[in-house]
Amino acid sequence: MRNHTSSCQKTPRQSGRKFHTPTQAPLIRTVECDKCGLDPLCALLAYDEGDVELPEGTLLRKQPVSASERVFRAGAPFHSVFAVKTGAFKSVMPSATTPEQVVGFHLPGELIGLEGMASGTYPYTVSALDDASICALRIDNLPETSVERDKLTAGIIDLLSSEVAFQRGLAATLIHQSGEQRLAAFLIDLSERYTDRGLANVEISLPMSRADIASFLGLAPETVTRLLTRLQNSGLIDIGYRHVAINNIDALTALASSN
Amino acid sequence: MRNHTSSCQKTPRQSGRKFHTPTQAPLIRTVECDKCGLDPLCALLAYDEGDVELPEGTLLRKQPVSASERVFRAGAPFHSVFAVKTGAFKSVMPSATTPEQVVGFHLPGELIGLEGMASGTYPYTVSALDDASICALRIDNLPETSVERDKLTAGIIDLLSSEVAFQRGLAATLIHQSGEQRLAAFLIDLSERYTDRGLANVEISLPMSRADIASFLGLAPETVTRLLTRLQNSGLIDIGYRHVAINNIDALTALASSN
DNA sequence: CGCTGTCTTGAGCTTGTTCAACTCCTGTGG
DNA sequence: CCACAGGAGTTGAACAAGCTCAAGACAGCG
Image 1 (cartoon, each protein chain N blue to C red):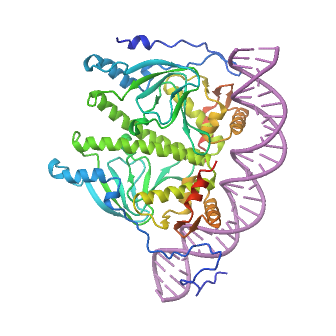
Image 2: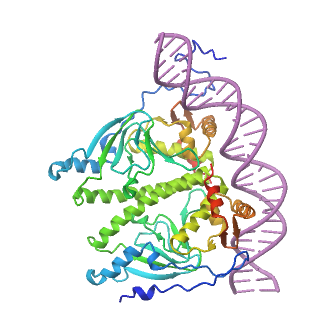
């Protein structure tokens, strides 16, 4: 039962249309397996399955998740690491203060849930921003001592420590930058992450609501709208309903990192 | 003009004074080994040294570091994990925008430098806030496969993932809270961390400058002063030059996490 | 075609910043 | 031990950024 190839089919092509119009041809939403962050482990398991007698259901590919459906809830017991195949997800932290706090977005090819490994519970709730699909790798029933386990351990340390560095940088950015700079940095970050996975285009998907962006950036939703409008008026970007086209990435980068 | 010539003894200030007269005994600045975050690893290595033939200088205890001296610089190659023994340290990140960005403070018993393990370089510069001392555990020349290595790996995953959780919470706090709430949360956090290591007192040390606090909290130094004054006027705290006494921790906590 | 939730736009207000003057603290050298 | 210098901290006033409240415009969907 090795359907690695059959469950990772080629993604459907999109028709390239111009932006400026509110409604839009669908952007590419699915990452190829070879661009996916889970692929190293995924491949490892797939290749070794015959030898190691992994339990059933250790690797679940391309599970569909409908819009706003939860993948797991904050505090749920850790069992799997996920990778986004199609669509996008958000991480939401239950906050004492604000009702909900968006702490991250997850694009195709990116991993979800690693942070739960050490504590044994997922630290935040993850839900789909649109109709999406994920691959799931069960960790909790891997043999205690195995090649997989060791490689996982090594990979986990890497991922965790880059996560720490990322969070630190994020905090620094968010605190000392103006709203306009944060928003510019956010758009650039999204664009780069799409590019990393081979999903870049003139226009990139903005699958989350203004309120989600606002929560993530620590702004009011109205401010996000106003800043997007301002960037558009400056000619740096063009805004669609849930898409954005970056016209002048250099100017945007300069804006994001100007003193 | 300035004519406080002969009035500078231990004269009590008049009411409405800015600074709370520091009548307390010198604050405890040194953590005991059994309260130190490095202790599990430290003990492990110390006990096993005879068996395992560890390289010389793997574990350096209580190295003195003078005020403002650097432990390591951002980008330096990773070699050791450190634990604060006496005094306090700050982590500073080279920022494109602001000249320097304080990303963390390290109190006695806390670990420094773990985040450098994966990338192979320390991600930020660490320097002493006052005359201090640290213990250093060399990691880069531990035998590849050893009991120490395995236990280290397990411990590192735990430490890293709690660091991720901490950073996430920190980011959430910093972004969505007012300055007053951030400052209150900061003081509470310091107090709790001292308590965890058995260094709590009526009055706790505030070894960093207002500018450091401001940078860390994303505020202007003047604002930090104003907010501290406001908290003091509300009777929640008393401020000394580089000390603070928390008079009403419940009210402070309520303030930090109010709606 | 109308409903509902998301997004946009406007006006007044709160919070925190900037700039500048001043006070206080601490270490250093007579 | 005292005076001094320089850095750290405080205070005030004007200004700017972002928030709140409120109303209206525009999707997507039954």
